[in-house]
Image (cartoon, rainbow, N blue to C red; front, side, top):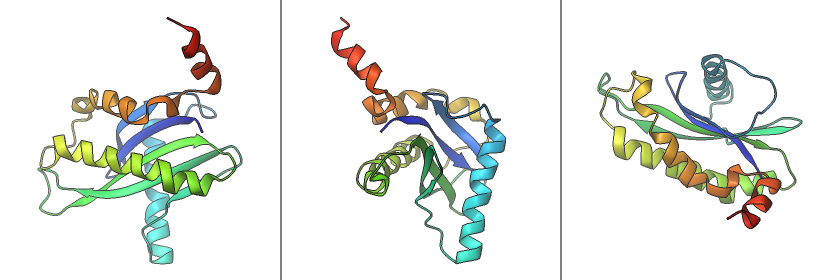
Length: 154
C-alpha cells in the first residue's frame, strides 16, 4: 500500500500536511481539511458515532484516527485528527486496522508530546514535524518502483 498524503487536522484546518505522491488533482489544503472535518462532524451528528475509520473511493482510501489535545487558547480538550490518503487495494479494512491506525495513533502521540498545552494557531511552527511523519511512515510512502530502485542505489 502506498501512502500518498498524511496530516493532522485541528478546528477544521490542516496543522501538518505531508504529500508524498499526487492523489488526483490539486485541491487547496484548507478546503480539503474543512471538508474532512465536515464529513466527520456530519457522521457524528447523523449517526451518533464519532468513529469513522476510513472513507473508500474508487481509487483512494482516506483513513482517520481521532484523538484530543488541549491548546493554550482553550480550557477543554478538542479533537485532533490524524489522516492518511492511500491507494485503494484489496483487504483495505485489515490494513487500516492492523497497520495504518497504529501509525496514525503514534503520530497523534508524538504531536501531543511536543505541542500539548501550547498555542496551536501558528501553523508554521509545525513544519519540522514532517520529519517525524516521514520516520513513522517510512517505506509505506514509497511506490514499488521506488522501493526497487532503493535496493540498487548506493
